[in-house]
Image 1 (cartoon, rainbow, N blue to C red):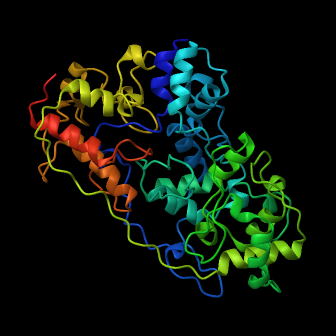
Image 2: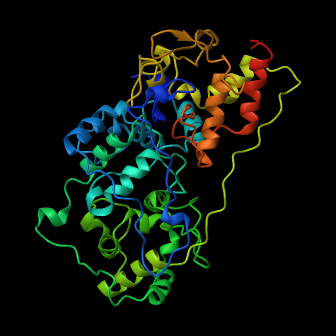
Image 3: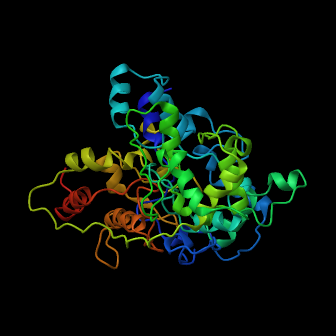
Length: 431
């Protein structure tokens, strides 16, 4: 196994050409509706999203396989991805020193290894998450776990496919298996005021952010934590979203004994009584939340007047992020990476960003024709630049239907790096 080719694939969450258009999608996603978690909360947990079609679990199972969800997530119901194709396990092997590579390379990789060391398992999703929330999240991904660098990528699926996937992931609720009914009034007699006190006393803020809730303890810093604590903090959701994601009865059960619902979860079982669990859940789902401040993309910087070469752009941009998915065969496990040969539900685009010649060759469109990544769109931005800007817009909550932001599911490239790419293109792409 070649260490260098494998590293190129590790951080890949999804594929597609720079500036992937809506032609890739299996149906256009509607604009995201305002979420309850973005508004103030009243005395009861509001419905997170409007009721959606039930979906077909069998179709959802096929989609989960087609979209290769098991390359990042465990608990998909699919056979595990091969070790050398599992993005997260590869990064974990590097971090733990198990990866077979020269010591100097391992040291260099670990210094920069921040992406995809942890990712939530989808096991027992039906026992934890509302089906309609899963559907809405797939159509309009947003940052649920503030300590994870990566987010759920915007996949090429439409509403029907999202309903099918949500139906598949929630097909096997434990109460249905065991013939039990969820309590109709799970928070009856609970005190949100006591729950707030317990939230602090039990140390919930050690791992969880609760944005918008005034006066709660901030999460502890991750650096220096033991491995298990670091993973727990990284995977801990912002509790602002809990009222949208979970039914109150499921939230109570989860707070009381997380491992009984999802074995292996890094969420610890904190000693408490059933009454205390109800109180904490009542606080989480009814706490008054301040509205989210409007997000904005970084300001676009003017073109540089100094000379910019391919070598500089490659070192600061392409080699750092883009090559993870868009590479030559020798660099990415012999196939050029998912952004070259397809994967995660996206078509092969033949885009190789590992060499000057590869970038100049462009990508393959839906008609099988070669297109330039430097051609300009309606707004005048080169296609490659438009994809980078689109990712910034996605992080600000304004996904562009016609352009899929890159890098897909990973943090946006900074304004200085985009300025560098755009300046290089404007100068005629000197080597």
